[in-house]
Image 1 (cartoon, one colour):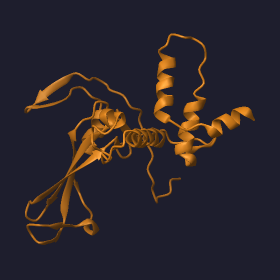
Image 2 (cartoon, helix red, strand yellow; image 1 turned 90 degrees about the vertical axis):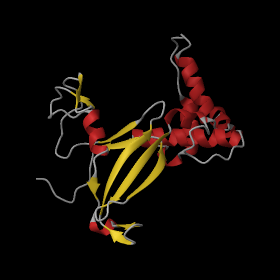
Image 3 (cartoon, rainbow, N blue to C red; image 1 turned 60 degrees about the horizontal axis):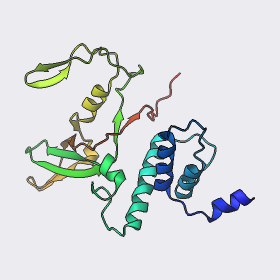
Length: 216
């Protein structure tokens, strides 16, 4: 009861508890360490994830960074918009910028937008259920572009996922965008690219997909 009361009166500080975990991990002390205070702080912020159920690691990661951002921003009385790379330690380390180019297939006009990101979600190749791996990562240059030599086409690699992410794709008819040059909605091509890499890049591999087709 005393322990529960102490936890109830404690102000949750996720950044403080993370610092305590890293300090304990690198202290050289071999005594077992329990991250109880860290879990309590996290559950205070993400009550929907506070249970014994299996949770998504990606959602766990994002919720921690979001809470650290909010805590430090409030403590320092800053009004930086989320995504600015210098607003807090979470964004200084993990924040990057994505670029999106939407090109009109009628006139060739391109609309470019930039958006901050804390991670990049990558799709796996459709129909490829193999494990991640690299057959041979020796680089080679072809037509001035650097690529990977000897990569087995049946082996799914991070490079292939990134190539898929940055591949140009045709938007559906119902997703027509308003072309400023044509002055009407037109079919278009969309291509994503990475404008600025963060100090630490986090890739979320989407290993599951929803399908309306039943498999027997």
